[in-house]
Image (spheres, helix red, strand yellow):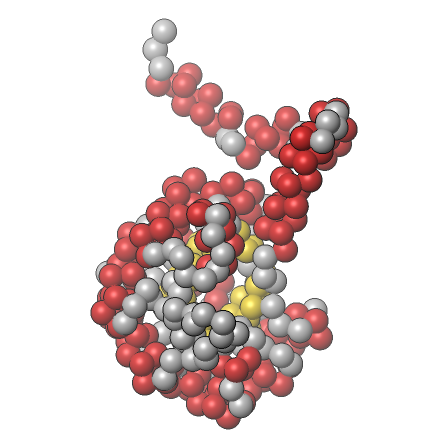
Length: 286
């Protein structure tokens, strides 16, 4: 049992919807913690580029993701939900993935039903069978060494299947022992309503359409407990780095960047300078 996992469970046990911080590295997780976000989410797409500089076509492996999570949970006291991809293999691989991610301090682990690896020149290869995904989710639940770790059934079915097939999948996933359902590819309020009818589990929704994401009462009434807005923060940060480096490379003055820089006080707070000075004063002898 861990404090981070208990906090995650408290959030999804409420009857309200909580906005998660989509973070991508220890620095962004630290800032999210400072801003008192209760839930942080590490998605596969930005995790790959932030950690390895590669695109979201599964060039990373389980150990890459576990190491990334460990560095985040070491530096930031956050309840972290991580994109566990497809579990990095079959149901037996899922067992190891869950145990390694647990050991890295993750609070919740998503196991998705997308077909992986992606096929060359195929826009979307679709979903694995319901039977295979059920087996993966059951394996994930059984693999936990801490019963407070939350296994999340992640499904892209609403973006790829008829509604009745999507709801059938969600119903089946809900019988595996998973304790949350994450929806991607949601295109309407009706999709969220259908998912809510199909399961009593809390829903986590990624980038729903504006008419849903801007209606907190609707989301809460339909079982959505975590809202994720994708990765605009990462995109803003990436552009800021590019623009700043290009400005200097093109001969621009360093002074021109002054107004865009974090203040010394913010930098000091983010890197916890005062905390480490106190440690030095307490434990380092002259």
